[in-house]
Image 1 (tube, one colour):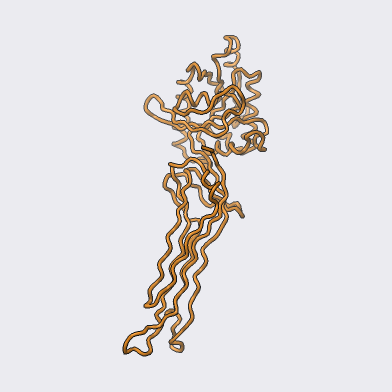
Image 2: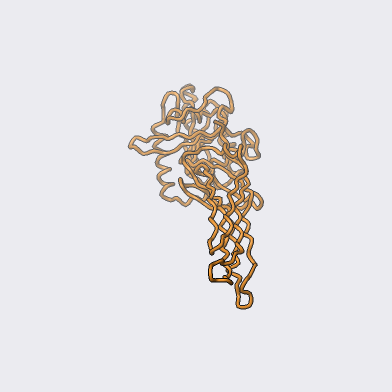
Length: 344
């Protein structure tokens, strides 16, 4: 299945029904008064978040959604039937903007959460409302009010506890495959991962956390280079970041600094999230190189002068994974308690 995380749609709520012009026609009542009923309300268009969806692919094939208009009013003061609402399901984590103003209208982050984004028009009044002492047989009525109409931008941001960030071939896919049931494509060439992957990781005590494998970033990603900002947006919702650095790189700290720079340029707030540094592929390193890498000082982005000690792992050999998962679980627990992250 193709992973589609943005889409544009046009929605049009139903118009209100037309009010009725009618007069009572009863035996022995030669001059019956007006009894035209109101038109029915047009259908609303609402969006509902569903955990059963994971992509906006459907919106590539259908971009226009319209609700029906309300039924027209009837005699005997009968109001026309209101039209049915149209419910559009989107994945949990979908943010919806107005395409004209770019205003954020709603952020659907919980399963079952709903929002009306185009209200149906009110039905027009029938002639019964226009009767007066001097106008006892009114023929006035109202047309129904038009339903709201707008263009929307849908933007899906994955909801995950941990986001794996790294250059291409840093070992993100290998790690998520080793600690979860996710089975991303793994190969020894750059940009193997073309779409984000989610995996559920089970900790020893039965606790679980959701890990997201974000496609590899390169220098200039915040400007759209490589897979660029198509996938940087998915990092915004993660509670904790794990910077993965290839232990075989000639300059692991330099690689890390590239990642930090790209995140800062895209959204500086990302660097305030709890994070740790992970050096991968330790099974491929000679003992001297392994010792050298383990003593590297990675600068802490949020605090000048502070450094971070890396966690050394080998996803292939299973080394260091317990320490990594325990550290991630601890950071996630703290983030869940604080829960004041405006990007979540």
